[in-house]
Image (tube, rainbow, N blue to C red; front, top):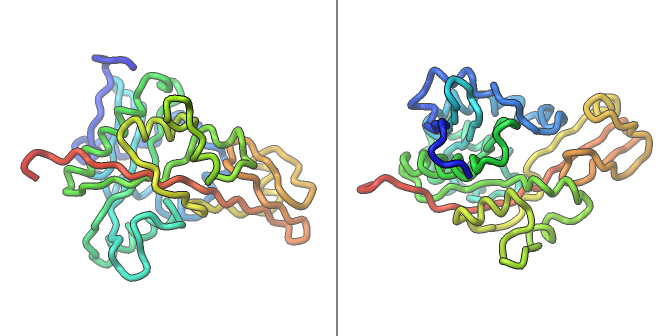
Length: 256
């Protein structure tokens, strides 16, 4: 981890001039995730609607990382803090609550994305800490996170429920991104079995992945955490991604 470097991390609310530059990052997200309908409809609005819940890292004039979170009310009928629908569900609830005037009771992270050139520098820990601070500054004791384990794509056929239980000799998760969260004080709560859903025609999946999609059944796609389900009869393939709910205590300002 690099200490005393030139990277500055702040809530977007304190640096509103950077809101329009939030996506100036060379990210490593698989292409097919950008066709997820909830992502398309709402994610691009998060930093504008909730800048106090989102953080940005810069190195000089360069935007090198972003972290998004949203508040929502988990106490309304039919809701819970860690829904099976993962980040799609909390994103939908957050915007519904903003529209209806429901007071939030908790906050959920959505993503921490770091520029590919800045990976391996300990920035993920710092971004997570900054996000906890931003959420705590809004009066929340808890930051939830539907974590996308970043090595799970290497073992797509292993159930997520089994994967999260795999630990190193030191008791920390085998998965690097889950390990970051646990080392930062987070506790693994449960699997969110349907955190993201991408559905498309076989022609669309061929375009997104370069794979043939020429047989029924499971298709292992680079970057996908579980296999994509392919149906030739219906000319459709569907990806339902599980994530892992992790709970963090926030860093609330003194006296709050």
